[in-house]
Image (cartoon, rainbow, N blue to C red; front, side, top):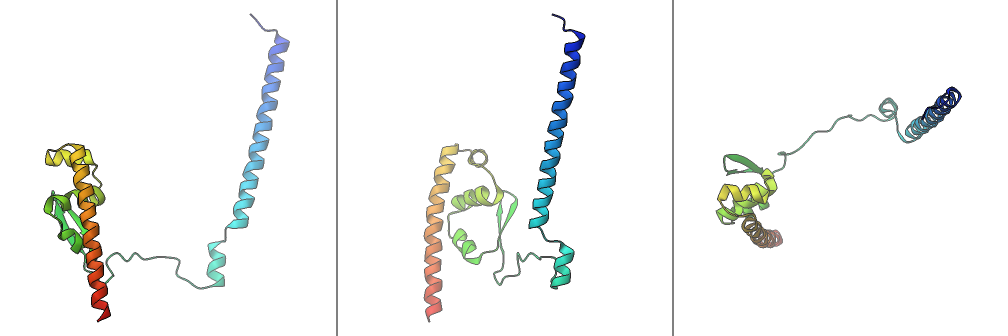
Length: 152
């Protein structure tokens, strides 16, 4: 079916009108977004002139008094900077300790850990859950010991 020349011209004009409406509304949205951003944001120059502050931040990973503890798991170094956590982890059996470190610190999933140890995923999942329970008990025991030491 062939359309007449008049109908094709009508379609073209309608499409152009539609495009103009869409572009107009997008321009309105862009201006609205800029206005909202202007209302809510403060210029860094304004802040610097009003109050003096250092516009930077420093990370303090190892500035605490706790000395970081390094665990070596399958050739990967895992740094634990919380002394109580490192002590509680070191009290766990080696396999449970390694499963926790590989899962939570290195980022391995149960399948990958299972391949390293030659076990299935569900076995590693069970070992990890048991290790978490044991770690929680050790954590609470160490917390209680610290509270006892603080009271004397």
